[in-house]
Image (cartoon, one colour):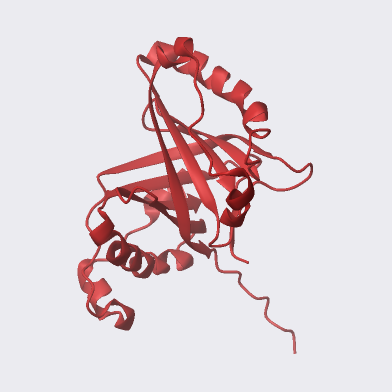
Length: 230
């Protein structure tokens, strides 16, 4: 099962490229992004890639993971001409530029199961993204501390998530809580996840956006096989 692992030990960076869509354009854009980003697998420092498709039809997020910031900055996306050469791209147009690209570091990553590694696993996964933008830079530290304190309680909410990852932007004041369920089938018994309830005092400090996404694609990094000695 393909997975995208989150850990704080090696200081990876997570890059979220955000695309606006509609129900009528989502499917084609998912295919185009999947094809155009396959070349990432061979890039130095690439650790994994996932496509998140919002359930309201309005967004797709291409989430890529890199060993460090210089690895991501050194990556050169394929040109539209290269895209059109792919046999899989027949009938599709090259993806447009994202409306926003955010670069994050992992501040905290916790799993509901002791000893388990926080990760997105398989194409049945569902993700809730809670994006909080402090209303002034001076509030960021306070907001980040409050978000870290939320994580244990989120892991106890129904439906119980597999993991919660706290991300801090490197190029803006944005902070994101990524809550992950690795199988949507569990919602049949306990209901779908709802937005995180934020206190009125906390919402005075931040602008808050929350959305639910289906994981449609996970592309792990290529594992180089060791050469057999003769």
